[in-house]
Structure formats: C-alpha cells, structure tokens
Image 1 (cartoon, rainbow, N blue to C red):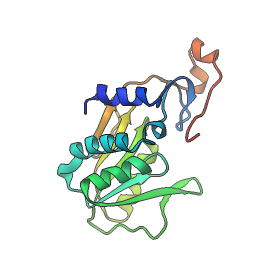
Image 2: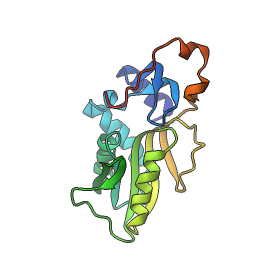
Image 3: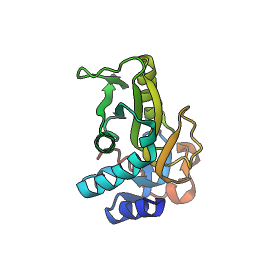
Image 4: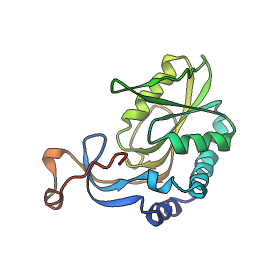
Length: 188
C-alpha cells in the first residue's frame, strides 16, 4: 500500500478531518486523523493491517503491544496478520501500564503498533513498559507519522503515511486558526 492509497482510504472514510484541532500533545493543527472512522470497516482494517505487517514481518515479533485506545484495533490486526500474540497498555492514573494479567518475558521480541504519532509520547511510554520487563522492542509501526519521519524512538520505525503536518503551540496560533473554535476530538 502506498502512502497515497492509505491517504485515499482516510479521505473516503471521512477519517481525515480539516479545521482547528487540539492534539493529545496539546499542540494545535489544521488536520486531524480520526482513525476510528477508517477502522470501523473490517475490510479496511485488514488492508491497513496487512500493509503494516508486510513492513515489519522480518522482525518476527512474538508479541504486538499497542497503547489503548488508538492502537487497539490496528495493533490486534497486525498481530493477527503476523500470527502472534497481542496485548495492550492502558491508562491508570494518567500513565500507561500493563493490566489484565498481561506479562512480557525477558528477551521476548515485541513490536509496538499505534494509529497516529505526532510527538510519540504514548509510544515512548509503551516502549518503556517493554524495556522495564526485559523484553526487546524490535520496531514501532504506525498508520500515520505526523512528524514526517523526524521522530527518533530509538528503534526502527515504519508508517503507512508520513506527513509533515503543521502544528502550533497554543500561544502561537496563525490567524486562520485563531478565528476557528478549537476542537479536541480525541476519541469522540
């Protein structure tokens, strides 16, 4: 799947939004990828999952881990495509943790999968969970890299879409965004 084909799927499903958005990072943007809108269609989930699995299959992960909520659907599909185990990290007291009895073994090869990454905070937290347990983070795979490949996560990183999407600090908004109400779509 090419980047243009992936972008086309986002556009066709209404998952690429235009306006004034507040991202999880606190930055503001004119575009927002609402992956859940694209991932509600299982044939599209399969396409995205197969494309990511093809990019990272050579790492032969034993487990795929995703930060909840955004990475759950695509993470599970990548794990299904790679025929390996899937687990997820979830928030507890505003930090990602492993719950529900999920464990990682020392030396276990792990792939982190996320839907959209801008600054990589949740992916970094997930990588730290993997390392704290002595498991080995092999790579990170994401549907959308909003950093245009500039983000260094310390492991090989793969994406279906790599864009330089402009982001702005709340106190440095351009005039057009100052005129629009800010929406924090997150998981709405």
